[in-house]
Image 1 (tube, rainbow, N blue to C red):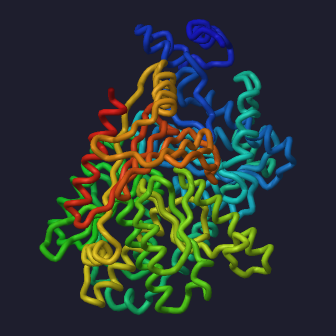
Image 2: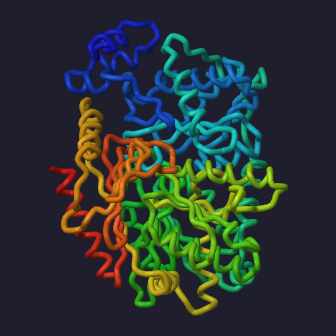
Length: 585
């Protein structure tokens, strides 16, 4: 491995790198900054690239993006996958430039590029890959990361983010590419050769038709949509036009957009962190909601795959919904309406509610209530998308009929705790546009029954039990951050705690080893191997720890059930107290 100084000097002297890049690097005076920019190549992981913008091998720039694209093109050509690549981008700094450069590199390698003419949400990219029967997709986005970040996510032909075995194959091709290997042709030449094709309204129209086809309560929409007041903020991202379009087409007339956060802006001037999980992101939206007396307050992240929600209670106060809460509420609406309309599978167990190991256990209770199957995946919506593809393949092999015994489930809904869900199988990634439509539709339906969405959530707690969940992140910055995280995880594997605070650990699931350990011994885990530790706790509590796939952080997830909301909250406080003492020691 090259020393960071050698790589720094190479970037300053090589003809491959332009003068602007060299000027930026020459101006650096902090040795730690130089080390951080060059101690490694920005890793192309199982989700693609994500990093801070700037010059250097460990930064997002035209050279690291070019290397990734050259590797993707080499993979597609080597495997004879000739369907082309769909490309989308968000509002972040340099997203458009990276997207167009990606198209020109693909074209130089003889790979057709389908490029959206303006910014689009990530779920529309997922939809378009399947709609256009493309071989792959790329979206330029850093999702909900701070403004200094950007990213490059790769999707496969099924519209899902790359999963095994294709992720490792693509990574091997990317790792074999040097900056000197990257080929480009001018955009005009790519278009003239029929290798760069703009994507227009036809794909957009097909996407919105697919979302609107999921409506279950047209009568409630007709009666109440015009009366529901919605405040919405796209957080200066891609959601503004798509969310407003679908709501308008469903009949919602009173949609008020936060003006300061309406226009796409990669600097996110009113936000430190453009993430609907962060309650500070709702400051302006809640002020507007009080002014307009709104029923719903919605926020989408920059690439519009995550949805944050506040709901007005009958008292007039606004209650925040976590990703678990909004996911469960949408699931309840869809499942209850499908049950009423006779749209659930004849054998209920053939229907599947798909979630992740770090999402609320309330999903299991809800699935049991409706008699359907709950399926858990590893963290990350790509694993939910992978399940949908497996269901459809198994159904096709079974003559199009669902059959749980053959893995041929009917996909009913999927969600994860990080504010993402998918209401139908038209895409393979979480979709905040369709989630906003589903929540607004649910608000209309329940209003016809004299209930707010807050009332529905409270009724679910009474019916299923009081569940409380949370998440905490520990930062591991710097060149040695990854090694320190690795050492901490290894420590926990070798010396599993007997308690988290006063809460007893009943079992440990080590997904890296594929083993579950408890007092009775060891058993194999069904899910793929991953760097995740999961602690099963007494009285239904749990705690899960894993390194972030996109940031230098260790993520801690936890949850508990209680006899009341206060009891559940107290249980989680004790778990997080114990976990914090363990991981921060």
